[in-house]
Image 1 (cartoon, rainbow, N blue to C red):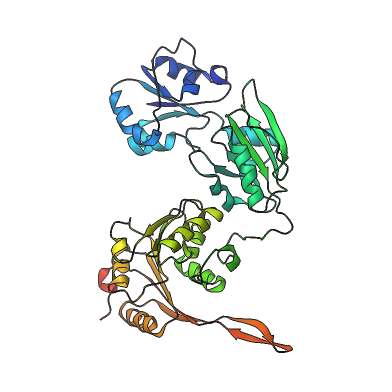
Image 2 (cartoon, helix red, strand yellow; image 1 turned 180 degrees about the vertical axis):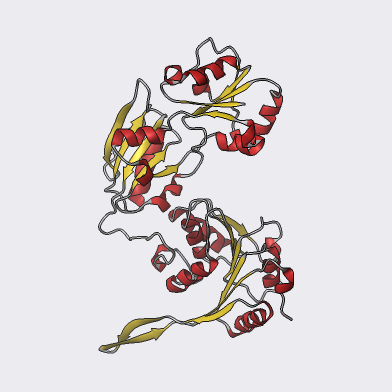
Length: 409
């Protein structure tokens, strides 16, 4: 199979190798807009992608098995494109890929922005809330649009998140004869109507003077979360995320999610980090979903149910945090059994009963058992003194590769 990247410049912008592959193909698969860019000399059967696209890939390719297939992709097929799905279904060795410059390369060339210093966020098939985690003062972003309405949605989100002064430019039909900067302005005063659906949005982030600053590391201000008191406080949260040690692509179980702060900040560490929040209270579960959307990780999955029963059908985690319900029979053992070798388990508590349980598991399985104490300065009459928060006992452990080492009876 040949995968051919094509831009807004259509057939005229393709090198000869790409043209030859398209002429020789018996089956041409792509979006309707891409297929319409091909001339009559590309005589293969034209097959538009169905919607939703990804689940249809295996059956569609099977229907044309044995024929020379060329798949059209926008720009670079492996940059937020169809290349990934094809490689996962067929294997990369089955593909011949002929890329075209991506819209991001075109946009940065037009703006004079170094590509390596420009963050990219795709809103194709994703809610605009996914942009929120990338917002930092002074940062440059290229937003891949889902259609004509995306620029307005981006402007609205920037205003809502305190980035109204940010400059937005909408670049349409990049690389084609109708290329233009269609709109330019700030999110606060965005007056522009929707334009061409083939666009990207360039954002120069500027935080409003009165907007709350959210950093790039765990330990966001407690005020960032809507909660009913069930919140892992800022300083303990930062220590907890350090013990969980998130890495790109890893999956966290946040058991007894409360307000979702641990799962949310796990996912904010890298765009590919994933998390499942498990919360038995439906009101709190809904609050977790709302907090995740506001803080830029709307892909956080929330399971409403009591652990350990609610864990049974979840995908295997790389790390588990238990922030509530520790005394539920079998909970810690179920979390431990679900972890692969090298997986991390972290549990926090403030009660004596749960502390005794963590001490028993520490004796049995090792790891680290620490007590975290935080005090805040507070008025004492006309003076200032320390107000002590409830101490938190934390057990953290890494599951060894040898099961015999996992239990020290």
